[in-house]
Length: 102
Image (cartoon, rainbow, N blue to C red):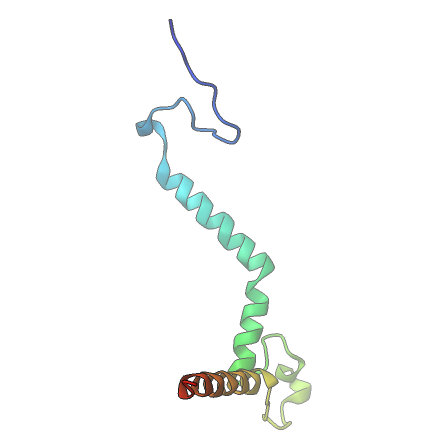
């Protein structure tokens, strides 16, 4: 008598031998899918945030066009100052808590 378990929902590899599964192609497909998802949903905002932190205009900005070619190159985003300010507050708080052993 053969007793074969039914595959669980979402288990497309149930009932196959381990040798038959092409793990490399599964890993490549997972990487490609995750990269496509990140590119579609997050990468543009990440690149914009990094550019702001490095005091550069984000890619695609109007300030890279010929109309702004001879304008001032100064750019001061609030990103870096906000990060430094919150870091300073955190350091002050840690020092205040650590210095008083009431």
